[in-house]
Image 1 (tube, rainbow, N blue to C red):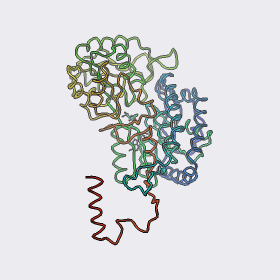
Image 2 (image 1 turned 120 degrees about the horizontal axis):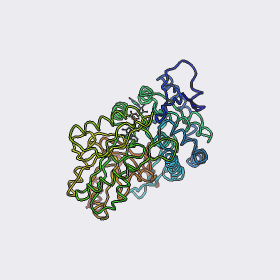
Image 3 (image 1 turned 30 degrees about the vertical axis):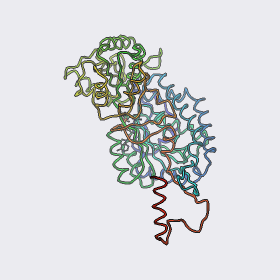
Image 4 (image 1 turned 90 degrees about the vertical axis):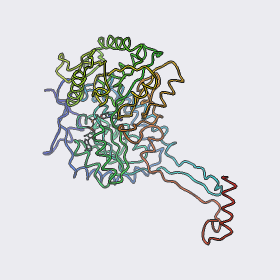
Length: 506
Ligand code: NAD
């Protein structure tokens, strides 16, 4: 068995500790055994991060932006190394690995350029109180715990981490036990860029390590990205502790295709949106709603194009890599089996791919779907698209909204008015019109879910500010002896206020 070890991992492997194997799912080669941090070790990290907070938060916004610029340059220079690390532990195609680096670079470029503007004190109106001044401060929260999943190990770790750092927090990251190497690579680059060791710390491990970070009385905020089930547990703990949290959770995104859509573009979008990264994307297209008159043509076009899609790892520029997580393969198979039993038609059957040793699955296309099927209501998180027909706009909206999730969505029509109307009626954190998933790379657009897809936003002005405590400041400008509403009260001032109410607001 071939073993490729990152220096950061090798350094950590001393002593007799519980470890988890990090495996390349496309080849089943062992990459490394990675330690599971205990709650005592998490406690030590929190103490280190707490001590480092004063100096890091004491830097000006411009100073922190300058350090992040160095990190950006390093990420660009070492893009292939990062993409390689991502691909080795996820089984992604090289292109999907490069797209992770591209996305992080775009986001980082935004955080460091816009951070100083959006995080500096912001003037606010004082309404009728013309003799006052008001503004808001954005104070860093303190020690932020970031817990990330395995499906985009670079984007979903670097995104929250870099926003938190820009805002002046120190950070402890708990990467997924399935994909820790990419986070250790980020740590390596951050150190080289001049981010002090204790400002960004990594606690590898599983749910027990993540739990220790959440439960720790001295972590000031948790930013969690992962499943709705885990997010619910974390939300409950944070609620009990009154600890601020951002929860970026699962999705079951609908794509609504009207008969007047640009069909070729919609078909290509369904294929990329549904099957890239083997469908293991929180904003993956999982449900496609197609107007009845074009349903059969649409389905056939998707099936024909998918048959030509190259699958593989490392060689020949495949479009589809392997699955990342063995458990997910089981969930996908269960959903397909459930659909078959309930009478769906598997236009493309999907299932395990026998040509490979690793966790490869063939793309599946399911039609004749009903809303009680798992492929329609539960997150599949695999290379599967489920199709349903609709006849009216209202029916399409009802079907789109018929799950517990509300992360992303898309609507496809050449009628701009209809597109905007439908977009407003679909309950989701974001929606694309004649596009798919591209909102995620628009750094100025906040990202996050509604319903069971989560709480809070990352990216954009709102995302950067989510990693801060907003402090409202009011300053008196005149220095009068006393305000009209201070003691002692009198009949005269009471009368005056009655008059003022009538004059100003009547
Ligand atoms: P998961 O919930 O199993 O694990 C996510 C992380 O939480 C891992 O690091 C894990 O070790 C940790 N964890 C597990 N139990 C914990 C606990 N009790 N306390 C603290 N931490 C704990 O999710 P996953 O399988 O890694 O990721 C896939 C899921 O993530 C999918 O549902 C997907 O939709 C979702 N996701 C959401 C977004 C988004 O931005 N909304 C992005 C990507 C993935």
